[in-house]
Length: 145
Image 1: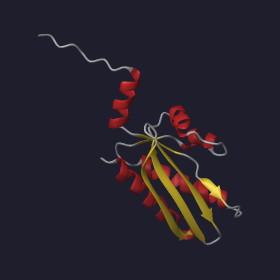
Image 2: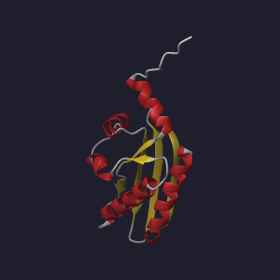
Image 3: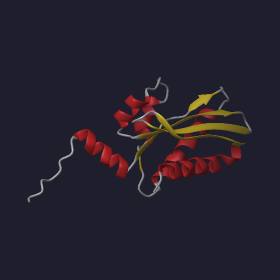
């Protein structure tokens, strides 16, 4: 009996690729409040998260320049994910004053509009790199091996 090769349709092929190698897009976080200099702080936060996720084995991360166009726009996560070729999207917000940060972050599986992970972090501004590490590690853990 001769076996026939299996040919995947484009949607099925994308689903298989997504299961094997998740693609994550980290969207610009919303800046809450108008503290001078906080926009630069938010950009640094996102850059650090992207760098740490990109270093994770088996995880593909969309470049910041690709997701930056969604910085000041209303977002439809399915549209954004499709545009960026991502199956998972990280979004969040940052509220800061000169000393303290509150960062809300979530990871959404776009195919079913479900939160994979969500949390908030209250830290001093000096602990920005700690927050970046904690968010990236939580995302890596949530995505799995």
